[in-house]
Amino acid sequence: MLILMEKLLKLLFKIAVSKRLYTMLSLVYSFVIEELTANGGVIRPSKHAENNKITILILSSKSFRKDIDYIVATNEFRVLRIPDHWQSRLIYQFYPGEFQKYLVGGWNPDNSDFKYKKEQKELREFLQHFFSKLYKKIAINCVISPHPRYVVDMDWGAVSTKMGVPHILINRDSQFASSPHLFNRLEILFRDSLPKFEGRHVIVQSELDVEAYVDTGYVDVKNISSLGCPRMDELIRKSKEKGRVTEERRKKIVFLAFIHTETGTYETSDLLPYVEELHLFFVRFAIQYPEIDVVMKPKPKSFHGWKEKILCESIKGSSIDLNRIPNLIARGDIDIHTLLCESDVVCGIDTSVLLEAAVIGLPVIIPYFKDLQNPKYDKRVFYRDAYDLFDIAESLEDLEFLILKRLQNSVIEKDIMEGRKALFEKFISSVEGGATEKYVTLIKEIVNKQNGDI
Image (cartoon, rainbow, N blue to C red; front, side):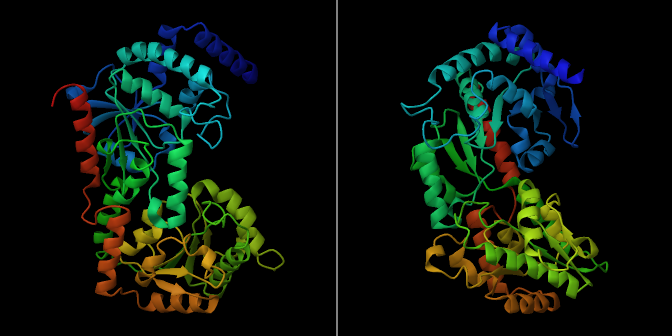
């Protein structure tokens, strides 16, 4: 019965879109849009914001990291979100379901061979009429999206901007310059695969990332700003409080687990033995040192694939039972900043979390084993020119020695800490904090300029 009802509702929705029932659709969407409160709650939005606050509508809200939460918590804006499935449900009445990200080959709307020019024209005409109704039912001052590759956001943002509701892209991804290889790949992506930005402004974390956007023509230099990363403000604050914690606790090491191909950085299976060897080491370390907690933390989205393809494969053929190692924790859903503030040593490679751990004074060990010490990887390893700021393990024996040594002595020399801070500011955010305030100021400036208030 439920399946039948769901099919009926989908059919009715399709009919409403095909018949261009804009008033009815705008009424439905005015009810599904939610308002986020400063204390983390969700309420039904009114037509207008109280106290003349600027109203932000978040697109693809599930894909944002915690940066938006900190902007909401300032209580400077009324922040609304449209549930992702309601946004995509509308867009994919025009586009086919597989067209979710801009890809190489016929998927870039700016190219003459774009497969869906007719569909895009129809979608944009539809959105213009739809928004004229929706934005009257709920006043919206700007829309914000998290990623330049999300198809559902770019048409929504382009049409909104044309109608006087500026689209601001706050790209959740950064670290483009982490390696020369990654930067080159992203320049190709921005130049060849992504349509030029039709919104009002792009906000990125690092000044190093700006070049990829501007030199490829994705956005004009006057319409992009590097402001740091709001969620790092809280990490910096927590790290300053860390020294006040005096309670006894178990020692804890964190391994930033990964799949050798998950970032596309290496594009080879040559490193699979290295990856499995590394995972097996931490499992055995937990068994050998039951008084030390070992946390294996992969990326949340890759957790299940990682556990099946890497963790379980690394112990295959042994008598090890993961369920019988109480001090081994393998989870992808742990808040990384909370975890860092509770840990003693961090180990990993090719992730910005290394810089986040480093800037708060944690010992950071990079397993730079023989498999990686290969000329073909020189331009692919993240932060290779800054390895003097970390502890480098060149073998499993080195890794065990360094972990035990750092558990006994975690002090980072002053000159190393200064270098770490400079590296963090170069790639991520100011060590003084203040990124959240910068975002708030710029969003207000963009909206007020659009409204002619400045």
